[in-house]
Image 1 (tube, each protein chain N blue to C red):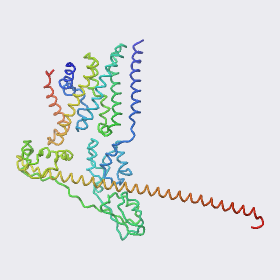
Image 2: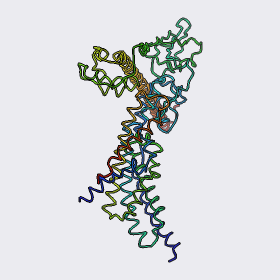
Image 3: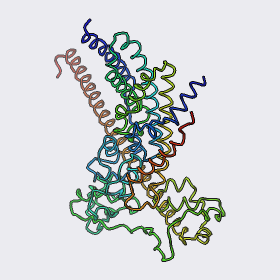
Image 4: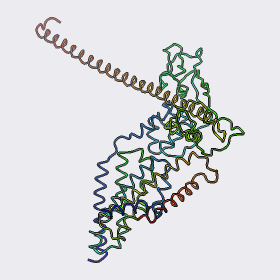
Length: 315
Length: 191
């Protein structure tokens, strides 16, 4: 055999075996459902507002899992972008929306102008509008996500979007003149009465690494101020902890609210589905009824025919 | 037995692939931002490296040597490595989708991780037996994982520290890597 043939033969063997193996593996490990989508979905605010260009939070989560930009969600704001970036190990990009949209808003109906058409009630993805036909409608403020989906259907344009009460933004304490850089002396560790690591917590609080701060039990800090007292660099450590705690609580609140909104959205979907099923059932019942009634008509006709045959004289 | 242990220690510490032989630097810098990611990358690379060392030994000894085409080894090893990486990717996509997404391009890039090809070729140059080849590959992978995870842990700390502006990002990472490399030089003479 010439060397060329030997080479081709050897490579052929290797590649064929490899191809068979990979084909088998591709079949065996076929992807059916992607649990990553659920993980992304829990981070989204669940306003179902479609401002990202997808018809809801779940479809957007699906799109993200295949590589769509993570900064398209105005209701989630920059926090959501950062959380998604952390989950997917991406660089957090600035939110792709103008500032006006990033402000949280809620809908308000000018009630004396409302004509009671119920269009906005049908449009609301979280059932946050109450009212009945020919009656005034009203927005449940605590449930409104400010998605603006009710604005378009309103025939008399009586829905305004007002800014929700701005939440207090935790601000870093002003650097006092005496505050110096941390020299990592560890005095704060000795001083802490609840055996935490104040120096680590300081770095985590400063770098907004709240997961890590929680892991190092930031919430156990009793804010006694001893670490600040012993710090040779005069760092107001407790101020940093307070700020971080506030931010963590706010994050939790937001997540809880998102969960509640998601539940309302799910309930609405369920309700719509069951309504549709009921309608279908009723339609079928009617169709059956119509069929049986035609059957009865047929029976009557047949009886008349027989009667006619028996008594041909009478009509 | 002692020869195997010696081989392992030499591959893990003394001739560490990243810090002493400077192989596999791409994932070392690329997927060391988070410890979780680094652990995932280490596991994937360990799997590929050990298997690649074993399979390439078999292919070399029982296919290339009998046919007298040993000069074909680089190409055939690359094919073997590519197949193993592809297999790992399929496996990961099924079992750990988040990790698959996070590792992203670095997962297929294990194919071009020179540590993997390096182990396969070094095994042949050293004339290792099958068992030795397997343990050499495994040791190299453990050394790779050790350094990658340690480096990722350091970088996690660094990301929160007050690094001076000119040193932020890649430069402080390079300096850290250099210091780690210096530290690993201390293992020379252990074996």
